[in-house]
Image: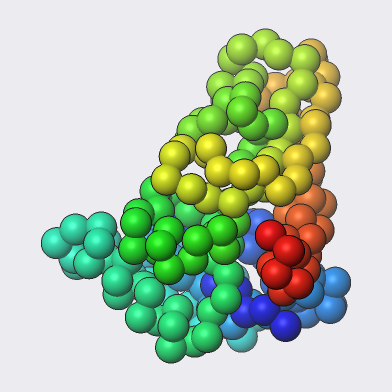
Amino acid sequence: MMKAAVFASGSGTNLEELLKHAEDGSLKVEIPLVICDKENAFARQRARNHGVTEYWINPKDFENKEAYETAILKILKENGIDLIILSGYMRYIGTVLLNAYDMRIINIHPAYLPEFPGGHAIRDAFEAGVGQTGVTVHFVDAGVDTGPIIGQERVIIDPSWSLEELETAVHAKEYDLFWRVINQAASTLEEGTL
């Protein structure tokens, strides 16, 4: 079974869902490690609640992104990590990790890419007044939300919804889609057919 490290910056609601799926056996990837870039990220507590080792690695302790990612890479290698899963990790991945985990970094994005890339996708879709948005799971490359898409599904927007109601609908789709697409990607990677 592949080992994955989940990177998170915030509350970790997607992380929570992944850990539950790992525990009940429906997620076919082991998650022994969570990496956070924010000291107060609740994702750290969620990891501890599930008995998963978590690290807070402060980017400000390093002179540049390369040094920061080199420190993370050392931890990943020590733990035999095969796959990186970005779950609300609000930091761009640099060349150190991209080179070490080429086509092995998976991100979830709360829009139907290439629509609404960037850090405010749900709000952007809401403000654009579109009839639908979605959720995308993709491999990470050097661009912003431009990597190869593994799976995506639409969310139809009820015109009466508030921004908060749209956020709830998109998050529900994330919780349903993320673990299934990770299984698909991990299976493909293990078979070497990617």
